[in-house]
Each structure stands twice: as C-alpha cells, then as structure tokens.
Length: 273
Image (cartoon, rainbow, N blue to C red; front, side, top):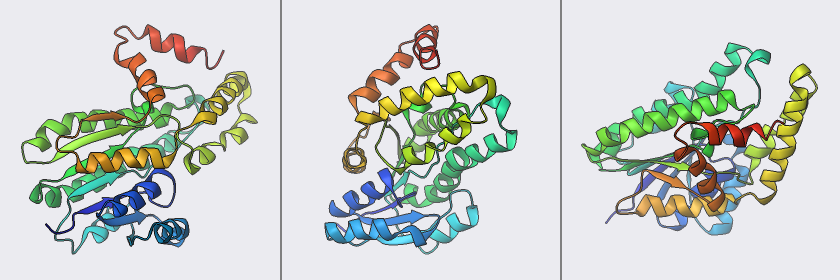
C-alpha cells in the first residue's frame, strides 16, 4: 500500500512539531505547515535528529487563500490534524470585541477553513480529521473567556459534523490535552503584563496566574500527546473524544457529569478567590 499522507497545521513548536516528527517516524508522508516557514528551524532540526523527511509548507489558517494554495495539487490526503491555535488571557470589560474576534479567527474559523478545504480529498480517501481542542473546550475557565468560547465552538462544530462526515467515510475526532509543556504556555505568559492594567480585576487575575503556574509545573510533554495522535491516525475505529492525560480526564469529567453546573462553578471559583 502506498504511503499515507497527513497534513498538520501549526508545526513550528509544541504538539504540532512533535506530532509531525512522530507521524513521519511511523511511516506517514507528513505535510507540516506553519504560518511563517522562516520559523521551521526547530522542526527541521527535530526531523533531522529523528532521521525523517518532512514536506514543510506555508499555511495561515486565517487566510483561506493560503489554505487553498497549500492543498493545491494534492491528489491524496488521508488525514488532517488541526493543531494551529493561539492562547489568550483577558476579560470582557477590559478588551475589545475585535480582540475576541481575533481569537475566534485563529482558534475556530481557522479550523473551519482548513477542514472545509480538505474534506473533498479526505472523502475520496475515506480519511479522518483530528482536531486539537483543549479541556478549555469542555470547561469554561476564568480569564479565558474568548479562548474557551472558540474551543467550545470547535467542539460543538466537530461533534455535530462527526455523524454527517461518517456517512461519506470520514471519521472526526477531537483531542483534548490539559496542561502541556510547550511554547503555547510561554505565549500565554504575557498575561503577566496584563496584570499591570487589570485594575479591579487584579486580585482575581493574580490568583488565577498563581494557580496556572502550579498547574503547568507538572505539564504533559508534547511528545506524549503526539504519541496518542499517531495512535489515533492509525486506529481502526478512532474515538470521537480523546483526553490525553489522567489530569485532563479528571478535569473534563467534572463538567461532563455536572448536570446543573454547580461543580464547575465551585471548582473554578476557587481559582480567583
């Protein structure tokens, strides 16, 4: 059987980088994409160390034209991994609606752009879609209003798409990590600067940041998540929802069995007290 092809977004660091290398080691032809290929150095170094080759291409998930250009000429696509995303910390009173829209563009509409463009190829090959969401797509979290809104939207969209896609032979899964030790965490660290302008929200934000630093001290590695992603790529019947760690399963489980919402409110309320 010819080598299967997977396209992965957001491969310049973290889960995307680790998944691209792990999939190539497992025998996949990997189209590794990122917004700015000038940042491909760490990915290419990791690929060289692993002894694998990658097909690195530019793709900005917020620009449908670059999505179409990336897919142009492909005659086969067996899997899509929607991984590209961006963290955001803030609260509604202190940011603009434009700020929230920008978060939605990257984390929600970006997923839609890529998935829509890839579906004809995936349908032809009876392929699959794996989308990295987050436990933040299940449980709303303080100062993550825009980010969680985008991830909730992705979860609802994919949960609704899954049975429809299955009728044409395409499987759909969401992958929900908890804390992962990657540059994603460092990028969210700019919240420390936000603290200076937090005003009346400063005590709550300070408490949240302190709690978050503790949560990420024992974070899961990107390589661990990547191993589970590769297993999903080859699974005969992949699950719709995959929580990647015991901590993620426990956290999301709080919401999934919380019929009146009180358990989640009690839990997250302690984060800002």
